[in-house]
Image (cartoon, rainbow, N blue to C red; front, side, top):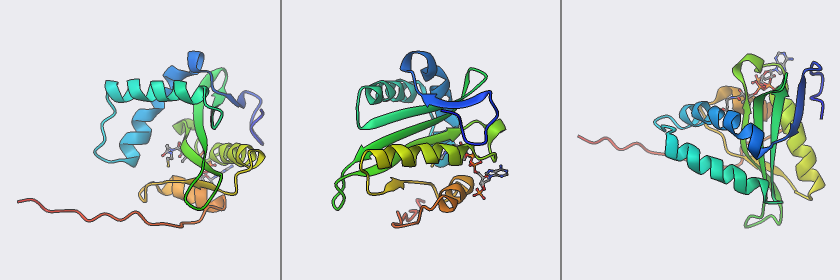
Length: 161
Ligand SMILES: CC(C)(COP(=O)(O)OP(=O)(O)OC[C@H]1O[C@@H](n2cnc3c(N)ncnc32)[C@H](O)[C@@H]1OP(=O)(O)O)[C@@H](O)C(=O)NCCC(=O)NCCS
C-alpha cells in the first residue's frame, strides 16, 4: 500500500513477526513510558509484548501494519475486532506509532485511514481507542479524524504521609 501523498520511499504494509518485530518492540519504550508516566518498559515487558505480537499474527481478529521508509520500519499500527456489551463488532486501535522524524506529515492520519478500511470491510459498526489525556498530539489527531470522547476514566490521587 502506498501511504496517501507520501514520497515513493515510504509505504504501508503488513507486519512480519520475523523481520519487523525488533524495530516494533523498540517503539514500545516511548509509547508506554510517555503514555503511562511511571511505567518502565523492561525486558519482561518486551518479552511479553513480543509474544502478544506473535499471537496477533495468528489471530484473524487482529491486524498488524507497519510504515516503512527505505526498508526501515518507522511506524506501527495494531488493530483488533471485538464485541462489547452493546456492539456485535467494533474496531479497536490497540497501538499506533510514527517515528519522531516523520511526525506532523500526515502518516498518523494515513494509518487511521487503513484502520477505517479494515474495520469497515470486517463489518465493524465503529472504531474505538483509548488515549492518555496528556498525549495532546495523539488526541488532536483522533479528534481531527472524527473520533469523539464518549467516556471518561477518572482517577483520584491518595496522599500518603
Ligand atoms: C500520535 C502519533 C501516531 C501521530 O502521528 P503523526 O504522524 O504525527 O500524525 P499526523 O501527522 O497525521 O497528525 C499529527 C498532527 O500533524 C498535523 N499534520 C498532518 N499532516 C500535516 C502536514 N502535511 N503538515 C503539517 N501538519 C500536518 C495534523 O493536523 C495533526 O495536528 P493535530 O495534532 O493538531 O491534529 C505520533 O505522534 C506518535 O507516534 N506518538 C508516539 C506514540 C503514541 O503516543 N501513540 C498514541 C498512543 S494513544
